[in-house]
Image (cartoon, rainbow, N blue to C red):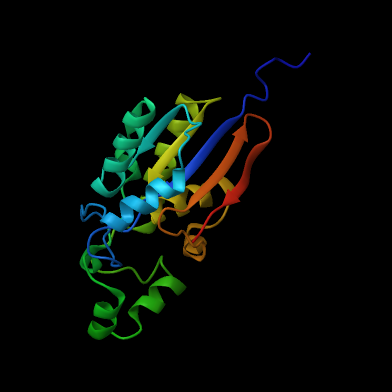
Length: 202
């Protein structure tokens, strides 16, 4: 006879932060806060209701500040997960794509075509980044099994989680577009594995 918790479903909503102060640039672990536009994007994305049981957030300010505000508004516990901070971009941090193309034309295109072998100087290795995100995600699933969880994180973290859940090679994760304040939903249980239910972009 099948046990009553065999199909104990866990729902994970992955919410990318809104636009930070300073607009589009490679931040990595630079701790910029959200702009006014970024705050508006985030509140618009979640709406007036919150059907989550808890929030897990990157410790970086552009994620953490909104997660704390949302948790306070809806009386939801907020857990910081340091393994969900963005990938370190090395010498690219703080620079725009235009800045980088002026320094070395074509380097951004080369990175996206082969992010394993064309990383910026000083950048976190892609396999190390994927490993730490995967470790945090597996622990989240074990700790909060059967619950509905909102994860507030970065584009790279969301891509790495989706790559793990959907068996996508890390080298291909940058093919996944993750918009500011976009929400993606994953569902899983012990036996049926992961399903991507929705992937929201601007």
